[in-house]
Length: 322
Image (tube, rainbow, N blue to C red):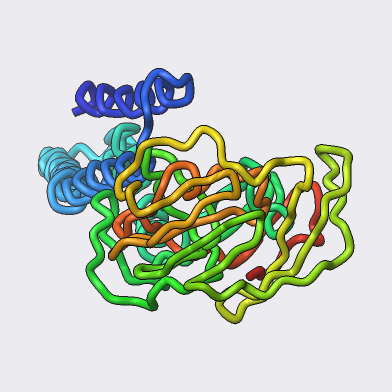
């Protein structure tokens, strides 16, 4: 067992190292699931096989020691070796290293797996596509059950939750590369006709209310951007618009249901197909979103982002957001 355990642990380390170095596309959900299964198997084996064996060995030692002393006493020998049975029993019952690193970690890994799979998952904002709502470096929490509980790894929905609504900030698996997680705002739900023309958003022929607010200073770009408050789905949020960027959308990829979109120099108009969503970033001119790579299938939804739990550069950002 020690050799087998060492091989299993080496395989996990090799997978993580190759992922870190960019040699493979890692899947943390799969890695965590496998770690839970493996450590769980060791935990069961420890509980029902290895620990009972060690307890039986400790009892045999106690019985053999008592029998030896009884035999010696029968021969009139009272001076015997002073054996510390308590210490010997403790050494026998002690878990070996290969169980410490498997069965001993199972409760912690199981709790992390359950929390991450069914309740809340942490994410770090890597880009500025959601500025000013979310900044680079924000550490956020995502509600995994709001839209229905999904099986880990498979991402198959097993319970019905709340439907996605316009204005929700959602984490999803990036359709062109599902191993990546993206975060955007839901702009269009199934059946909607979404138009983004001349940098104005229209849903089903109705312009989304917008009003100017004080300019936003981007510390990374060291410049001011025009900032607006938009009323989408009854939820006010702020967005940025860069007047120096054209309304035309360059570099559009081929994607499923692309025939439902019409592109022009003014922007794009799309009819959202059933079971799909149209996503956009709040940093409208600096966001790679559904305008470029298409619709997000319902099966790609991870959860609803709702809370900034830490930003090491600005503690004041901690709190809920819309």
